[in-house]
Amino acid sequence: PDICGPGTKKVHVIFNYKGNNLLTKKDIRCKDDELTHLYTLILHSDNTYEVRIDNSKVESGNLEDDWDFLPAKTIKDPEAKKPEDWDDREK
Image 1 (cartoon, helix red, strand yellow):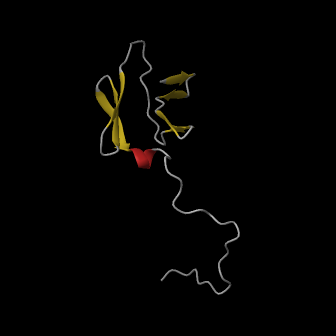
Image 2: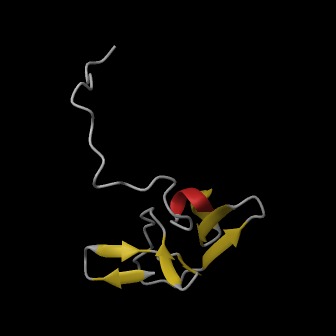
Image 3: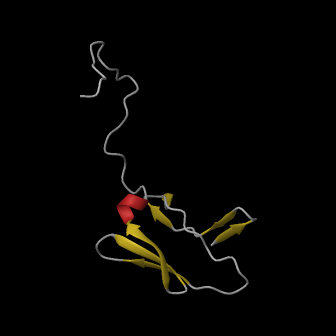
């Protein structure tokens, strides 16, 4: 967990993949009381995960959806432009 002042109270779930540290896209809030808590990450064989705090599930999802392990399927081309006769009207 990361508690830095009143605004930042989050659980960091970071994977190191091909030399890059990948943070989760989801905002997982941590407990900020005076007690000790148990933080658990469970990885399943179907590429899903669970984050538990004190054995209660607080977040879950798909690894590929919630981290940027793979590059984007399309690469933006800054040179690409619409043809002059392109019709933007909805059908």
